[in-house]
Image 1 (cartoon, rainbow, N blue to C red):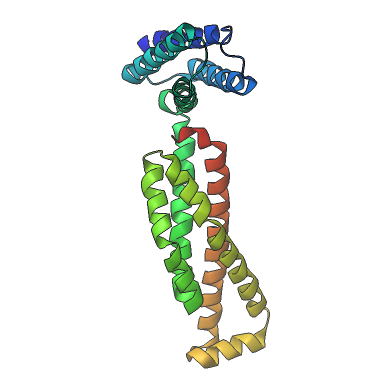
Image 2 (cartoon, rainbow, N blue to C red):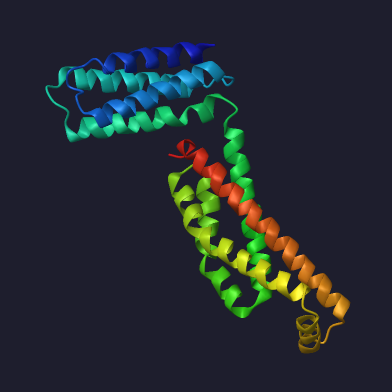
Length: 232
């Protein structure tokens, strides 16, 4: 597989970078070590022959190392190039292995969790509906950018998740208490003009939906954070 050869070339080039005297900053050395670890992981698990991307990584690695070798000190431009290279190297396990499936799983959990939130919050109370509207745009942008593996999507997902988690928790607390309180059930039945059995059914739907949404978003946050290196 030609990708293996190109990635191994990039790995060997990065390893020589650690021995250069210009690279004395421990922080930069640690980043390069992380890039090396990422390349080693990719080579162990590689299953996709993405020659174009492998050649790009190999060429950029050689180019960056060449710049550092001929320079007496690391300029801001070289450091920025090096940090970009490290970032690219840390994303490649998701391009050459099946690890991208975890990112897709996190994306789906986030999407389904947010759909449940908008449906339940929009039909629960007016203030919850307004809260849902406030994060509608950030949530849509998160979905859009996450599909393209952009870090902006990841940040928007993190930013838009806390409010639904809190509201789901409040819903669960209220519905659980209401289901155990016949007086509250009768009150709701009277206010909305519904049979008691229907009120029970609606509350159960809210309870199941809130629990599911809370679980989905919690799983999404965990998976996306664990695989945050997939986003650039």
